[in-house]
Amino acid sequence: MATEQPSLLSRILFFIVATLAALGFFLVGATVFLVLLGLAFVAFLVFGIRMWWAQRQLQRRYGPAIHRAQNAQYHYYRQQSHRANKKQNEQVVIEAELVKPSDRD
Image (cartoon, rainbow, N blue to C red):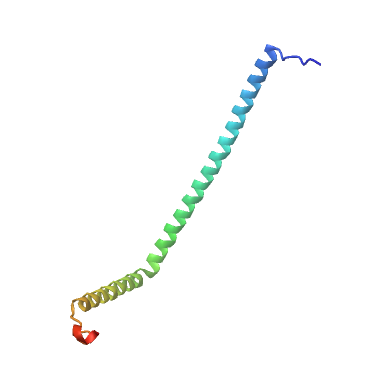
């Protein structure tokens, strides 16, 4: 039962067909990847434009009210920060008892 070795011509043809098949699979995979990447880019672009448009509409509709609320919030936090700094600078008296070393024993 001796198996016959493939001829040189069949090995060369197999190598050419396998190389072309691998190249074809690579190109199909790369094409699918690029199509999906393009779709993701378009979706991101559409989402970004939609967010920009919605923000623009909200600015037009509620712009002055948002500005006033932001200013009020800024001044509130600034006032709280000022109070906290003022409290840190105040001296605090802590009630304590003075104990002599001889009293401890």
